[in-house]
Length: 360
Image (tube, rainbow, N blue to C red; front, top):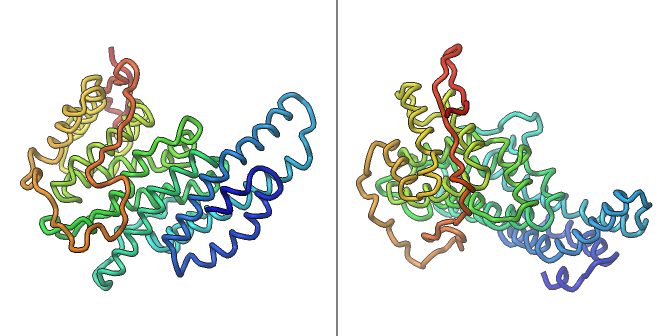
């Protein structure tokens, strides 16, 4: 981190990355959390310099002027090294959290049912949780904000990792601890991030979290409906609220409609009209501008006020061992969508499918 901060724009940036990245990636299996955090630190420290180099090259091209050859070479090489570093961290996190298919090379969703944890001890679960947290809560938002071009190549696998964390369920919700919920909290931290306009376009775009939009939204709804303990409802509601305002209520409503017309919906016993009524109310102007009303709709989907919702999880001896960030009761804030951001929904019967259309 010190070296990255000291290496200002110029050839030193590319040379530093060329030397540091292979060593840090080699340490992924030994000190994974520190290695992934180092990648995030490098993105933060070098992002501004790389961005300035890239903007100068882009501006020259737009003006029809040949860009400075040395600057173009430095920008290309440095961004390439950062992209490789992010990809290595993503592959490592994906292999641990999703499995060998986490790279999603065949352009299909690599998501499988939550991994069987019965054969692993608590230290293994804590390791998974810590890696999920540092990857989702630290690396993804910083990379999206400072080096979005470098994040893009790994965005597909990153989206799968976030969705997998959101789907992490607790076998015994009544006796769940903070550690049991930390993977889901990691996903909530990524969703609640504010990486800026350009970073948001990458993080939530069609090649990022937007790729798995219906799965992500429905995974969080499934967590509300019992996949997570009742005392997590407030954090889950805040995450869904942040997601809706990050992508817009119309896109968010489309994701929910796609999920409602598939096996992703967490309440399979509900009729199509019930599903649509819930979605219509969740993305209405009232819900999109009133967090309390939004949360109340989620409680209704769950089946009413849940027992233990006002309680707190058991306090783990030794404090927070996982170094969680963005959880701990902090709810991600998001700007309200102008004009309420609501979108009208209606029932359309066509081949038994649900569809979205504007209503007066």
